[in-house]
Length: 298
Image 1 (spheres, rainbow, N blue to C red):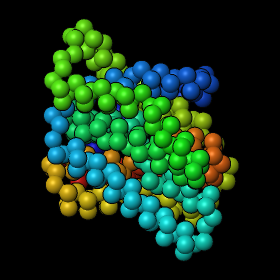
Image 2: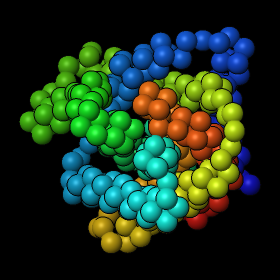
Image 3: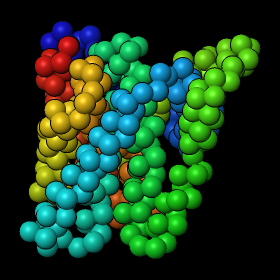
């Protein structure tokens, strides 16, 4: 109970604030999220990678992310064959199970649970997940050669991509950042996580569930909230990494479905109602599953 009150409840209250303001005021979420994506998140990403001590752990994180994605893709491929799902259903299930909400849900949870040191790992992981989701998420939603072109374009339209590149160049080349500019970056970086938490609450307020396909929702929820952290746990046993990094990655892998996958599903007609249902269900169930998992690691 103390884990829920001390770690999860503060996060949920901020989500609730975003949910409530959206229900009452009907704000333009796209405008708010654009500010977060194009101004605030690049600052957080730049600060993290500029100050990071780059070592083997970052390579392990990349390998971990790829292996986790591949494992969940294989599970979905097998289930598609067993249940004879069509390509649209498969794409919707992949969007819901392979891409977790490591940004506006996972990062604040990890910050509260593991402190600043763990938070640095979570920001690095959310950048990797954002790139993977913008590439593979678009690809599977669009499903084809047009999807591949769109996926590449999507990655290079992301401001955090350029923030990572700039930060890595300056970090590796030991190029000093002017103090006045760094102060501005740090100020915006500090406001990023509260902003994206409010945005998630606003996004959840806009999800409309018309009809639940319970068998598919149940399957996706189990993969996202149970199978994913179990796979992550197995990977941390094989890949060399610190105990803190392993704990952060396991918790991050247990996050509910990313809210942005609903946008892809709507845009490319990959079962948007199903994806929305899974996003909402996994987010609600995570109120139970995340505290249980955290009790094992903190």
